Length: 356
Image (tube, rainbow, N blue to C red; front, side, top):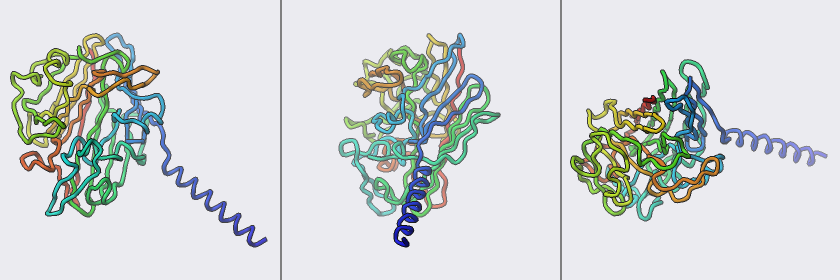
């Protein structure tokens, strides 16, 4: 009888522990709403899964690409709506040297690392620290503790991402990271695929773009920066005056996938880009404190089944990743991404939406 009771107690304790563990690792859907702006998230990858905006006639549409179910995001390979890191974009050779120590990272794009490796921040369950659905400042904060050696990166890192709706049709994103015990590179980015006509409206080649970056960091055949920083004036990369995405895209092999060095003072908040869809009248402005903007025209989308069964194809959206320059750890002339113990990394984005 004693043996049975002890066994029963063990089973009850184990069952309770399993339930606590499951609760801690629950993947859910969360919403923020203010006026006509409604945004839904999942804590899988601290990801935006939908964003509803009115057009000039007041008709609502979801302007970010994505999936119908959480399982779609768990099996995603294109980073729909995700928070990417510890280091977004590419690191050449999946390696770097810092303070005399050579670090070999987890390669997941040939010999290189992309968006934090095989299991970056887009593929983990974040904790929800705070969530206020409505009110004056609806917001949600996701947190994650990245461990020393994760995907090869040095040191423990405390990370948070806060999305907040503010004013009329504005959304801020604040990413923070604190290095606890070792210097480490940090470059977090947001990876929504935007189509202001609606996620299922076709391609974005007619979207008008005004991009406030007079230089780019050119890349080699593996999309790794060469280390140069060159002017865009007179090239197909020149959006210093507004023009459509498709106006010169045929002159760019494969489509746009390049980092712009944004104009304005380093570390100060500045306007990065204005995107306008003339058909719907929707306009989006993006402001940031980061020095770079990756402008990507979803060149690698190939028959991806998305929301409502709609199939996303090449040029179905644009991705606008404000960031530090790609592969900065291997280019001393690029702005540093190194965060030392006690320092706090901060990445600010402001999205302004309107119609005209």
